[in-house]
Length: 297
Image (cartoon, rainbow, N blue to C red; front, side, top):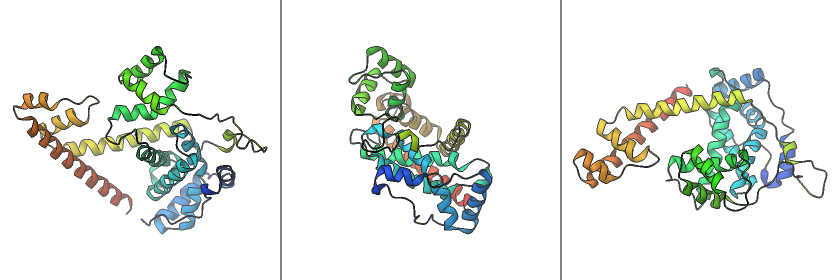
């Protein structure tokens, strides 16, 4: 599979309002047209086909990036990162699998934006637990749904609701909320105050429906679960147990507890954990590379 070439797409650097106006010029594709373009790119490396696939989904990228605008980072940067994810999606998209490109691309766009956010936020480390990452990326959405519009700390009742829904300690909710407090902007706000340029929401359009998104999420989750389960099967029973207890739980079991369980030292448990994790990573990378190779032939 060829690498997606540098595409002549509108630049966000020219101004956000102008960029949003420019990307509306690219028409959305009918399903059959999208399929044929994807075949041309996948089988012949046609750069024009790749460009049409990317540019027809730039509004989808902008829509998804807008959902992350509350993290204190420039929206233009989020869109630029999302566009990189879109290009990766086009590179790997297989039209024969039966779903639309937008369904597949959402995951690459979100992954690219989220990785950028995590690397840009000094208060959020990549080594945080799965629950903390889930809290980081879902707190604002849940606050909006339960109409928790407090400018400062959340009420005790709302803290309890959010902690219960995400299954995290209330202290974590309070701490994360304080990190994320910042100016927010309404989609009904005008793009420019000094012109009749319309509202932000006028420039955005959803390229996919909820059913496709749900199916895409289920498929992506299934692929990740398959890779993890296959890799875990290559570990010994003790390695699997220690790795699950130490790395795959929101509240890891202590080295002391595992040392007592297996009758070894804490340092020995730590060594087994590190070795098992390295083996797991190597297996997952190898399986992912093999899957990618099969998809490109």
